Image (cartoon, rainbow over all chains, first blue to last red; front, top):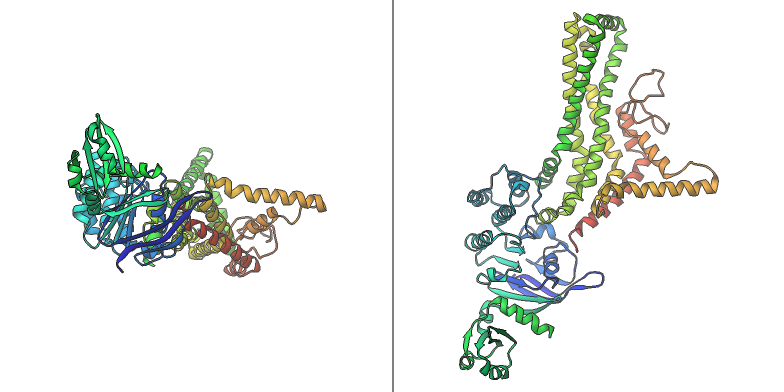
Length: 285
Length: 316
C-alpha cells in the first residue's frame, strides 16, 4: 500500500449543491499536504468523507479501508483535529487521557504526559477551565501521542494567537512528523504553513485546481516585479496573473524560464498566498 | 470489552451529578425527614411517652405480622428512589446523543476508534444497569443507616431493638428483590429507552419537546377519531401507555388486590393482565410475555434508527 489516501471520482452532494465534484486524489506516505481553498470550496466535505464522518459517492480508500464502512478500524490508524475546542467541556484532563488510553491501542500515556509537562495544563483541570489555546495544546498533545499513520488537521489553529500557532506547528514538525507519517492540513492562514508543506492542493467549487509538490511549485512558478514600461513585454509572455503594487506591476508566470524573465525585472518565487489568489482569480475569469 | 467499559466509565463521569449525587440527595432528604419526625414528636410528646407506648404496642404484635411489615416497608423505601431514578434515566437518555452534537464534541468522540454501535450500547447499558445499580446501592446504604438510627432510638427509649424488629427478618431478601425489579424494569422500559435515544439522535433542539409531542398528538388524534367513530374512549395510545405503566415490574406501593390494606405491589394494580404480587416469577412473567416481545421489536426499530442517524450525525 503506497498511497495513504486514494480517491477516484469522489463526490459529495447536498440537497441542491455539489460540495465535492469528482475529485481524483492520491496522497502517498511521508508528505505534509496543504489542502487550501476559499470558504465553501469543499475542503471540509472532502475531509469528512476521508474521515468517515459523512457519506459520499465514488471510490475512496484511506489506509486501504473504506471510511464510510470502517470508521472505527480506520481511527486506529488515523487521527484528526476537526476544529479547535471540540473536546468535551465537562471532562477532566486525566479522564480524557485515561479514556483515550483505554480506547486507542496506539496511544502512549508517557508521551502525552511529557508534552503536557511543558504546558500549564494540569491533570485535574476541566476542559472548560482551559483557555482556547490550552485546549488546542491538549488536543495536539493527545493526537501526537497516538502513533497514527495519517493526521488530518482541519483549521487546527483557528482563533488562536500567533504564539500558540507558531508553537503548534513547531511541535508538530519537531516531535511528530517523520517519513512514514502523512499530515493533511487545511487552513486559511496559508503563510504559516507554507514552509512546512511538501505538497499543495488547491480546491475551488469542489474541484482540484492545483495539485503539485512544493518543489514543482517553486520551479514552475515565478513572480516578476517590473516597472510600467516593461509591462507590455511581460504581458506578451502570457502571465497567469497580474497585479499592481505601489505603481509597479507584478506578474505571475507558469513554466516560463527565469532567465527570460530576469531581463524584464526582479524575479522571485511566489508565496503560496499569492499563488492561491492568482489561481482562484484565474479560474473565475 | 475494554472499550465498552471505558465508554461506560465516560458516561458515568459525564453524568456523575445525575447518577451519583441525586440518590445521595434523596438519602439526605430521608434522614432530614426522620429528624423532623423526631423533633415534631418531641415537641408534642414530652419524654416520648406515646412513642414508648407505641413501641410497647408493636412489641405485643404477632411476630409474623411484624416481620411482614418490616419486609414491605423495606420494599417501600425503594419507591422514592425508583421514581427519581426513572426521571434521571429519562433525561439522561434524552441528552445521550444530543449533548455532544450540540457542543460539537461528537467530532472528538468520532476520532476515537470506537464504533457508533459500541457507543450507543454503552449509553443504553448505562441507563439500564449503571444508573439503577448506583441508585440501588445508595438505597441499601440508606436503609442500613436508617435501621441503625432507629435501633439507637429504640434503645434510648429502653426497648430491645433486636427482639422488637432487627432479629425478625432478613433484609437481603427485600434488597435483592428491589434490585431484580430494577433490572426487570430496565428491560420492560426498552421501547421507551429506544424512543428517547432516537429522539436524542435527531432532535435539532429541545429534545424533550420532540420526545413528548408526537406520542401526545397521535394519542389525541386517535382519541378523537375513535370518539367520532364509536363514541367510546377505549383502545388508544394513552390506554397503551397506561397499561404499560400499570404493568411495570417496578415496585410501586399501591396494592388493591390483597385483603391487607397496606402493601407493596409490582406496578400499579389497575389491570389484571399480570399478577401484581412482588415476586421474581411475576417479574419474569412480564419479561417473557407477548407484550414484551412486541416491546423488543419496537425497541429494535427505534434503536436501529438511532444508530443510523448517529452514523450520519456529522454530515452537513
